[in-house]
Amino acid sequence: MENNKRPESMARINNEKLANEFIAEQIQAIQKQVKDKKVLLALSGGVDSSVVAALLIKAIGKNLVCVHVNHGLLRKGEPEQVVEVFRNQMDANLVYVDAVDRFLDKLAGVAEPEKKRKIIGAEFIRVFEEEARKQDGIEFLAQGTIYPDILESGPVKAHHNVGGLPSDLKFELVEPLKFLFKDEVRVVGKALGLPDSMVYRQPFPGPGLGVRCLGAITRERLECVRESDAILREEFAKNGLEGKVWQYFTIVPDFKSVGVKDGKRSFEYPVILRAVNTIDAMTATVEDVPFALLLHITKRITSEVPGVNRVLYDLTPKPCGTIEWE
Ligand code: XMP
Image 1 (cartoon, protein in one colour):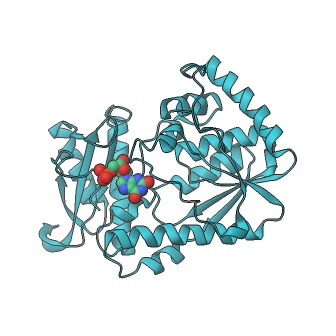
Image 2 (tube, helix red, strand yellow; image 1 turned 180 degrees about the horizontal axis):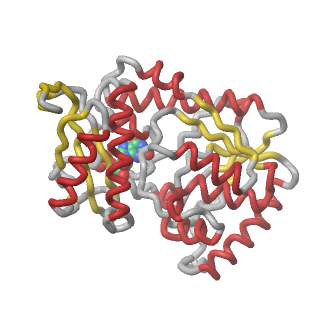
């Protein structure tokens, strides 16, 4: 039986020195566990999988095979950043899978939120399985499991999507972060040299923008979500709200409203802005975003994002709303 309890003697990793000690210990432990064998990792670009990747690259170099699946539901610039940081800067063995058409074709016409989630999860496993079968000599699977996942104390990341591989692909697990809390993972990530935009990023749901493009996903509305989200993030960063607000994003519903653009009647989608603060995602309050900034973001989104003629700000705390809309 594997020990899944954090050792009581383990100090809270809250500075670079402790992070470097943890990194040195883990490198030794990983080398001892996997020896000269290959390890597979689903690298989403989120904090946990990125820190696991950086740690394993230090420990075993090219014997780590990272698979990044672009399912078309990532934020603007994310797949590019994964390739830039891991392949170009860290010289990792990275397999980039462009599965955008595959996911969007499977999701076409599916409006029910839980069905959408299931399709995204199942398709992810299928793509990952296909890539795993293409690789020779894999004996281990690395996962970015962290201590709250073991304690099951938070709904932020209820699972890692790599579960559910068929039984002939059952690899021994490598989980170097399994006793760390999120803040410790960030300190370790920083010490490993990962960029701040990766280490301090806000939580992002596994099904990604798929749960923010409400109802049946279309490429047109998905682009409205992605482009409006990029503008919101840019403006929050410029105005000192990045790192202060816990989670912020945009949502695009599947209905249109009438408006006026360039003196002509328009019939286009609204964009909903959401910005919330929370400790554990079980309850949340709405950020009091300065009104002038909301107006500025509205102006940018309606003039820069094709197909959008209105912007709304969601004032609902959790409860009675949830953080996401689906
Ligand atoms: P809700 O909407 O339930 O969200 O208030 C709470 C937190 O969980 C994230 N979330 C998800 N994360 N898969 C995930 O990995 C999901 O299906 C999912 N749904 C919600 C959400 O972004 C928020 O941080």
